[in-house]
Length: 187
Image (cartoon, rainbow, N blue to C red; front, side, top):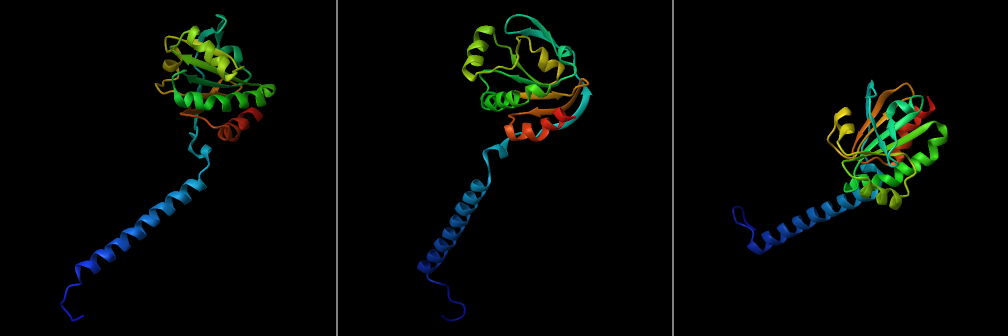
């Protein structure tokens, strides 16, 4: 090949195809390595540390009895705002139930507060998921207003003295419940 001549079109396209092939292999390898290194719980929301007085909130439980957050002063309370139509709310329910089962003897209470749905909608959901923690009905979004959120699921952990210490917006994993809430239970 002499100086100043152009490579043949066939050679140019062949080199371009080899380059594209290497890029494609790199992308596939990157995706494979990234996916295999990530556990499903890696996508759970990490809580934000906060410090404010627990709001006053009185609602009704599934039996119609009036219940209040003040009734649980002295316990560590996780308040979880959810709805039956919310996919991340459904996804976190088994982790919440397991954590509640494992820690209720330690002075831990989980209160699931359903947003804007009726007893007739909530009761079958509670049965389907085998929920044994207290479930409250909030047909008027009182909990969302006092906790100043519009997102579901939203969760707040209240310490034994009545101060909100952790806040989650989004799905919670069992791993992160153990990592963050267990510390407060042991205080």
